[in-house]
Image (cartoon, rainbow, N blue to C red):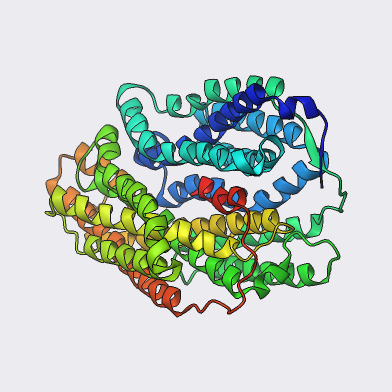
Length: 515
């Protein structure tokens, strides 16, 4: 049951739609941040003289904290008030954006990105949680549509705006862009949004929070460390094993505590289990792709930041087209067919991308990125709906948070594992140059390209590009094989004869916000 502190504000038609506008601004800020970072990675690598491992942490720090804090963030809002936590999250997001903009070192930038992830993890459950408070069932679909549109707008606007800003201004302005958006959202939320909270006061599973966060962090750190120090490195192996042990302890704890952070009973539903598994798999490949493509465009194709943004548009356009088609095709052929088709198209796009060479032209790049985007657009919302279709009104919010967290974890490991593989192959391929290789070039492909340009060495630049492509194409083949497996799994799913209750439209569409 939800308690509303200001019922008159919640019922005022004008105020509730103005309040929705403030939520749209908040979601747009989060959506822009993710896509702009992908474009900015090569620029940040140069500015901080960052290694590939540090570039991985630029991505992983955000997604790791986001995944770990999403479910407890939702609980805090239910307990202490959604409006309070939303205001806190907005302030944290704005402050972290400023910290990113003025970070003096790669380490401080990574810490600021982690704070951004915490702000986003607190914000999104609050946005989703207040919509049922403000809107009845008749209006809820329109409200969710506005929020979803704001999230989707971040995809095409982010690369274009970010690329343009990076060619015209210092990279810090990419993050300062969040500040005025957040400031307007804070004022609007403070004035327009009614306070609401759950009438229940279940204890917070602090042990579960600590174990899940520690396990994810340790495992991610070990994977990224292995990419730089080698997969046989003792410390990296110990970190990965330690992370797995802590996560196993978390699962055991969750089965014994009276009020668990994650209700594992949800996984008794085959629909939820397979839907969450498929959406996590596709998030793994998606984040790996978003890590690799901007580096490819700038290192191999020689594009600037603005050109990188333009070259990502086929991927974004494909995602939008796939998302538009998914519901229509599902209505005729069924969700399993759509998911199978989406995985197959995504696998085909990745396989075509894996044939890329130094001399590959723009036409092939447009084709394979568009195919990847189309596959993503088809499979992601379909897998999410399959999972949340197993949830009833009592646990739809919990299942949404768990699904978001699993997808976030998939993204963390996608960027970490695939980035580590790329880094290992890049370093191994360059090793034949021996002492003639500048030390800076060993850290990352961006540093290698810069070193070759500074030395006026076409041969070194060619070697850097070939080495980077060896790592990228290997990771694309891995992702293609994983997506092909996903296609088989999707078609193998058999729905139960007695379908579980379907979650409300507001909840079933909500997870698209973090895509």
